[in-house]
Image (cartoon, rainbow, N blue to C red; front, side, top):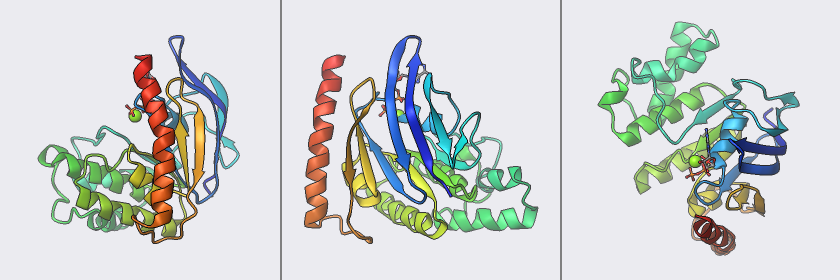
Length: 252
Ligand SMILES: Nc1ncnc2c1ncn2[C@@H]1O[C@H](COP(=O)(O)OP(=O)(O)OP(=O)(O)O)[C@@H](O)[C@H]1O
Ligand SMILES: [Mg+2]
């Protein structure tokens, strides 16, 4: 199970309203993408769902359990790489299973499986400073998967990757999401990516971030990126997003 509920969630920072009255329910096993202009509160929402921050108003629940304090049932990948510099690639990926008390051989196996999956075979014993930006990001992704989360929270996880790797990683993400029956809340600036991945796309308004539009992506998988249905949805989402990006610019 991995049902995430946001009920009337607002977040103020020093009197400045960043997120306003967001109501959203992500069904068990559902994939939701979050789009919106820069600064509209996407990362704030992910941090609230991860329990790394608390709302000023409203409540969040994962499977009817109120999220209070760090939510260890989710796996998160944030915009900036947050790897442990003193741990190797393998050591970083083993962290979640280790915290759960999984024994050494088993967690090593888990780590190697995901290292292979994200294409980092041969780099098991490298330290983060020996990796490129894209490679570090892939370690972060493998670490989130290795935590066997109920809910994946991803903040532009593929933003730093080249287009080819990005497409590959999108495919792998969908495979893992389907196989392991995880729910996902995924932030992206790419409408293409959202239409390829999501069951639903939520477009947020310029600040304060509110739910502006929700688009159902009712296209069977595997999806063809250039299908007429995909193009049509992309147009509609771009329109909705474009208005907000313009509004965000005029607020500055
Ligand atoms: N800890 C904080 N203290 C003060 N203000 C904050 C804090 N975190 C976020 N904010 C503010 O809240 C607003 C939303 O920030 P957030 O990082 O959620 O935006 P975002 O939608 O993720 O943007 P981007 O697309 O650029 O990543 C911004 O105006 C930001 O300055
Ligand atoms: Mg952000």
